[in-house]
Length: 223
Image (cartoon, rainbow, N blue to C red; front, side, top):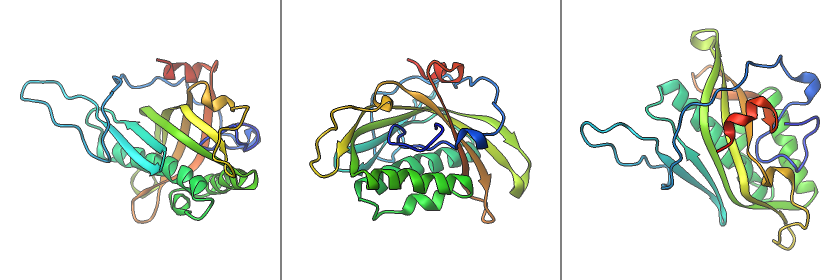
């Protein structure tokens, strides 16, 4: 995310700049339309015969007053779907860790290697500073920008646009928004997650990176 993990970063994490891998090519988001409907882990009704398929919108309720909305691409392949699900569950789980004051640690089962250290430190920063969150985070334009290896050694990079402008950072003691809101409440950004397969064939996040405006890679997230 930035040079250090701080409360200005929410909810996804970035590796310190010194450990970041080489810059990937410019991000070109998938051409997804913006959905307005919402469901709870439920696909939108299928199209009638002859109609083009449309993206579906999914809403995950994290805690009272906290939701994660996911705009899914049309007909993603199984691997892409699995990677999006892992990213979605991580984001929701990271917020859940914050709103539960650290009691819910399920999100740590979705990260490994450097990403596990960063994820844990990110959540702990909220607890140490007595901060919480409220609002809606939106994940959209998911795109697999790189694939490496094959079979059990396969890896991939998932790029996702993140909009947290409807989120607010709270004082956990009072439940009120803090007077000075961080940058992530003002503009969307691009979050990248390097993923790898585990022995059971599932995907796990191993490394986080991100790009903010005016970075060219983040411009694809503007609407």
